[in-house]
Image 1 (cartoon, helix red, strand yellow):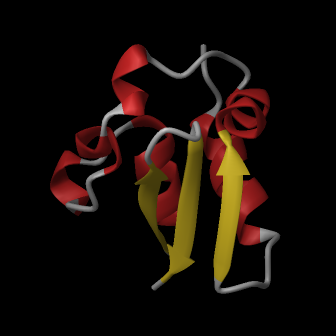
Image 2 (cartoon, rainbow, N blue to C red; image 1 turned 120 degrees about the vertical axis):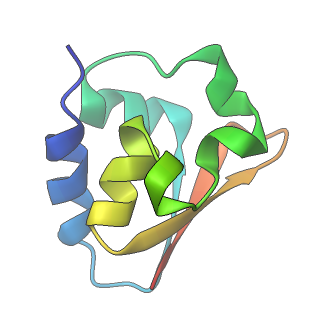
Length: 79
């Protein structure tokens, strides 16, 4: 099972207002693979009620997330 709480704690350790993480870094933090849908911008939508998985964890850490298309990377901006 993926540890999204661990991902929340990882993000909380950053002091920067902007972080870019590769999918492989996110997967290492959650202890599993991201779904194929993570390659679509909708997966990283910032609506709190619809957030799931690592995006929900990012919201809980105070970050909005944005897919960097074609790079398998996600940009996290602190709210």
